[in-house]
Length: 296
Ligand code: UTP
Image (cartoon, rainbow, N blue to C red; front, side, top):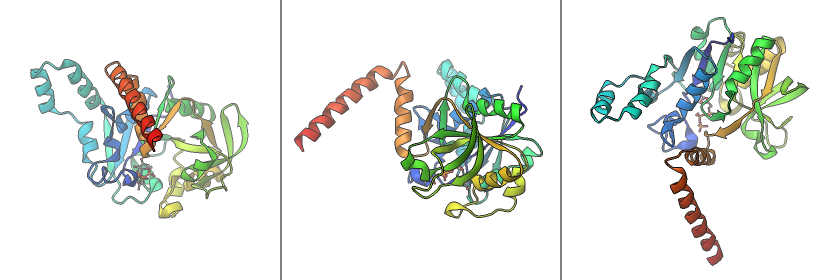
């Protein structure tokens, strides 16, 4: 059993990359085939052994709470229509015990985490961001939890990204490597193009010690005018060891449009009810597009 029991899922961002879809609907509720993205994240936390989840919500995020709540009317309706498989599915999501806290203003990821400090208290905890879905037999978060249990230190999930994409991420400057674990010299949030110290990008999975709140308390403004979690981690690294772990598994960037479409297609292609008609549609589409390019 891991020492990590609590997880924060921040979901109070504005989701500007998906506007206008996210004007009235949280981006965490955008569906990948037929499940909202946040359900994949909650599943990863539970499959990793997390016992308590707190979701940081903001304005217009009621749909997230409703999604994980029990819906008597819907259940009755499904029973009447004898749709028992579907009933089982929706009951599963309502069984999970989730807590909520509101971030009153979207002041950045660091601020969202700080809003959950009372729920965390004085123990190490996990953070999972909804922008990254990680698919692997051993869940991404549990890989970090295992390292925490051995090192008693904060561990940040990273993955290699192409050089031209480093400016979109928090990037680590690695010092030494032990297997897949890195000792880190520094953490830089969204380095300017061409200045990144490596191509190891922070990918939305963290185990942090509660001392991180000492630095988040300062509410220092960082890149993009927001309170950045990466900046607080950089400060934490000055007083405690903070490791980075290259997470195993496929990572899907559902926080941006192309990644979202690619993920939807990949997951749909794994579904028995969708694979064949989808492949045949994609073939037709490919042919149509090839003809179009030839006629140009
Ligand atoms: P993003 O940087 O992806 O921002 O936040 P965003 O608002 O969700 O999306 P874009 O970039 O405008 O399209 C990373 C994570 O931090 C949360 C987001 O909900 C997301 O899970 N976050 C961000 C907060 O909870 N509060 C904030 O103030 C900012």
